Length: 256
Image (cartoon, rainbow, N blue to C red; front, side, top):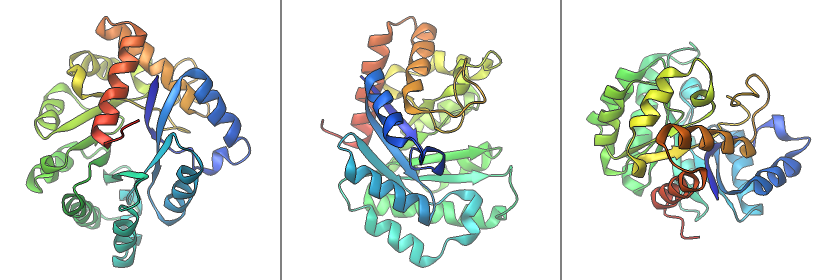
């Protein structure tokens, strides 16, 4: 069975056919998925969705692009939601230097506050990184994020950075880019990651794997990611699926 550790099945892109998409995922062998909320509306939609489906769990946090919008009340709300048994992680959080909506100083402050909250709650964190690798790893080290660990979501940096993340108790998660013909770095790192720190994801509706690149992604396609990494690791697909599912359940403290 497959565990998609990062979905946005709560996104508006699925409003017309969400239940069909969920059924396709289950028919493909997806037994669990984490639905990620990263602002007021997507968190609310994630929470509503996971309460309707036993095989779905939520991550709640504040996206760095929108860091400038986060209030103290928002952070208090996230803390209150984190006590719900269906919430298994905080995030996605991190830094994003591609877009300029939120200044880097604000992003860093919001990122640090969420790490501190995660330590208070003893919950793993899900990291969003876009063009900000060194600053992210430095902040994780400075804030002693290894106390809670978590996921480097859709990992795209090099092996040297990966080792620093592994040393801080983080798992590396791979999605569609590991299947791309030009995804050499992702393939190289995925080959080297210890099996007990490896996760898979779709980040749907984004980053659809080959041969669906550029189309709306969905959780069923996590199978293509699993097949690619199994080939890189010299494992059977079934073994890779089982290992990554067990890793996710261990990290998220999911018993079934």
